[in-house]
Image 1 (cartoon, rainbow, N blue to C red):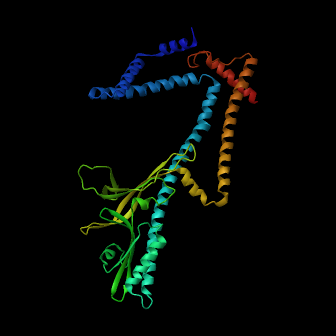
Image 2 (image 1 turned 45 degrees about the horizontal axis):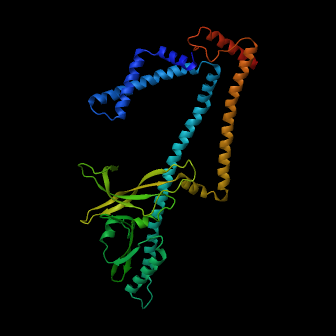
Length: 402
């Protein structure tokens, strides 16, 4: 009889009626799932198949454990795996999880920082315009000054602020609504209806009263294509309050309110960069920006979220992190790789030492006429001679250490 047929016969002799019934139920449930059979009966059958599969898995683990741990070598290997390899595996999993969290925060930071830098830029432009407007030279009218200042600002900042619009008016109602108490300026994201823009409003003192200079940069697909070049595809979702009923999409809670997507703005010609390494999975990030909302009927919300959805490559974000190290960044990366190789070599050497020690003990037991159990023997739980052989084996192992 061949070893395969002998093993098959042994497995068949170990099967009991609960095992056979569980295998049949699990097979029937699997076939019902494959052929997508529906109905209460098939749903109950799938539930029973899950329970039967768990039962068979427990039985298989017990049988495999008894077959695996028949020799001292296998026991040493299993002990080594649980003592050395499993903690390393858990540490690696923890590092990967922490890395994804770090990269998500890094990507959100890059997006927020870029947008807020541009908001600060238009705030500085409005301040410069206000100062220049207050110091008009003789012979220059207010209209000429506003036209010249607008043209100069657009010419200088057209690349960073595509679509920049500068206007002057005597209307101060909007500024008084959205500005902080006691402040005569505002800079931030402003959502008016279904349009979003980077907006800066500032009061300009004038002999005839107060004038307001308004700078707007519409958030369009063209504008988003220039934001945070280290990120991949970017989409900003304008939100509106969810008033109940059947939602057409996903509902996003924010504070005590619930919102749904009203209008998406997708960056033009923005795709995820190619992977630099074979292990460079994309990181999907969801973040929130704060904006002021004003409706056409006069309603206003000082805090309405704008949902940002984008992705990035960890390799690109890693380059941004290590850029701050200067010229030594390549040396730090090389040192990290070398430490990882040395650590792996130590683990392999320790594993090889366990195998060599077991072989040495087996040869000594053979020379002493006390042979260790062979692989073809019965499980030590079922063999009567397993315990004496194993005790002699440990005695030889203790003698070798002495």
